[in-house]
Image 1 (cartoon, rainbow, N blue to C red):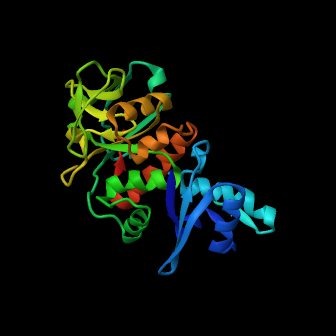
Image 2: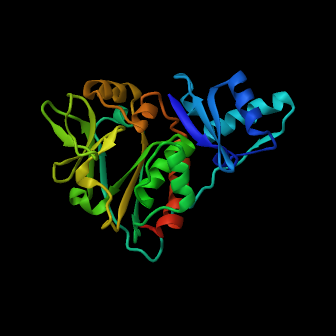
Length: 287
């Protein structure tokens, strides 16, 4: 799998005077292969091939962390910079929005976090966000959806956003699919699920998420969304891989989940996402 990241984004997490050519050279020599280094305007773009056994490098932060260990070996100073973290406390002026989550089998979802945001303003993302996503090969949709894609590239942690008001009875049941069940995914395709696929059902009995692969059309965030449920978690990698093979369908999120996502990164990603929701969508935490 290849990841494409801009040099300007990379330098938000590593402080170094190394030139892009040096970064490409030494990263390729000691770790992941930089297949292409391209100058775009005032920026440089790295196209990096990530080996299957190094899912920890499938992100901007992962590459920065790798470089912080590699560059000093060649007498180039490099300091790994911290990930911004936001407090997760519910906004005191907001009424708490409740929701219920049931996980029928813990092994399906070893690490689970969720947070509800209220007063969300749906709009286009800041210009720099759109530029970075486009350079990474991802189309910008709106500020909320872009947050999840942005952090998948930045931290290597896939996440999903639901329209809170489209979740029946404010309840989510994470379970295995049964024979004959189907879901209409965000791309508008109806998909027949193999038995044992990890899914989420809401309180009305509707399947609203094909876990680790793609969300359901019936719970998507759109221009009318006011409240968002952010879902950050890890899944059983083998189950995600089997589901992708059965469906002949794979997404960027699935490519990460099937190789294993660091469970210790879940809360870090949630706190980072909370800050972006406040900054980019003027949202307030409500649960």
